Picture 1 (cartoon, rainbow, N blue to C red):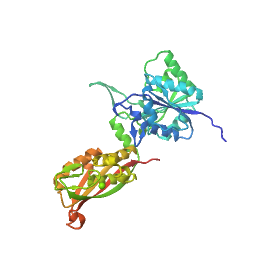
Picture 2 (cartoon, rainbow, N blue to C red):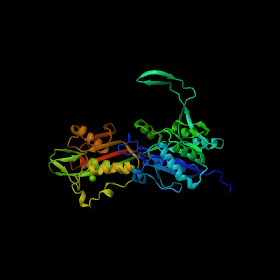
Picture 3 (spheres, rainbow, N blue to C red):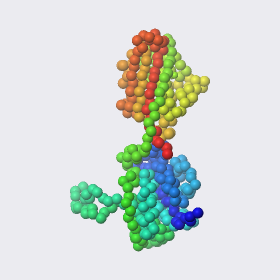
Picture 4 (cartoon, helix red, strand yellow):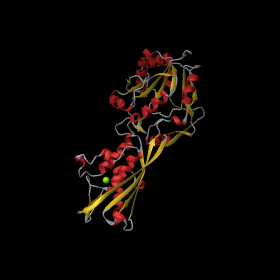
Length: 390
Ligand code: MG
């Protein structure tokens, strides 16, 4: 067997508390297609053949979040806790790696989950010649120095944007970080700056626009677009009998009527067909699987609960409902006057914009059980986007 020349460690910095994107959740723990951004990032490296260990650095307060959002793997070490500044976190990670004696360490931002393997390759190649190497991209926009009013022009020739992973010979970057601590250096925003301050030569390799850092809402949208989605459709059909009564629930809206729909729950035939369509789209059985009529807790239950549960199951798979189309089949009541309220209610239950909810009604020309007014039928189609798991 060919002897391995270099032992390579990955250090993923996930200690940031940036919550601009996700309410209380730091962005690296937000989900993208059913997995945390950090998990996506870990998987990039796990998919690269030559990696020996992966060390993450997290904030002490995020341990529970971390455990929820990570799948354990052979390469992945227990996380270590970071410090106040980025450089303190990186140093904590490097110190934790000392016992593993790596030759090379690649230090990477958790919020860059789309790192192409080609960049890792190029960094490792450059490290055969230099103690440090980082991916960079040229600045293409014209640069201005300004404070509301432009104060000057900055020559962009020779300027680059630094990305991660930043790769180093392990013992040298460790020494640089220890030195940086000893001399009480100011805050540094990347490891290349720390290496440079210590006198290490850091080479530049070509970065990638795909390797962007997720920092704001727009980045999150872009990240979703970077994912590969597959589209599935499910259909649902339901019938409920009409019996004497004083009103019916249809598509989450109560309609005064001289009859009511018979059923174990509120008998909302429209929401039942729709729930089955969504469950069908993700291969999750039918409404009876999740809410058996034999279970007394669903007696008289409002059907929005069933629909909402189906939507939760889609979300749990990292998926999104992109469109639903529902047809109600009955002679009476007239659906038209209630349609806007029904569409609004379904959109609300599914957290969709109303333009993704289509609701139609038809009669059967007085033919059959719906034509005779004995019951109402509904059929639905749901289109669902699911992330492709590779
Ligand atoms: Mg039903």
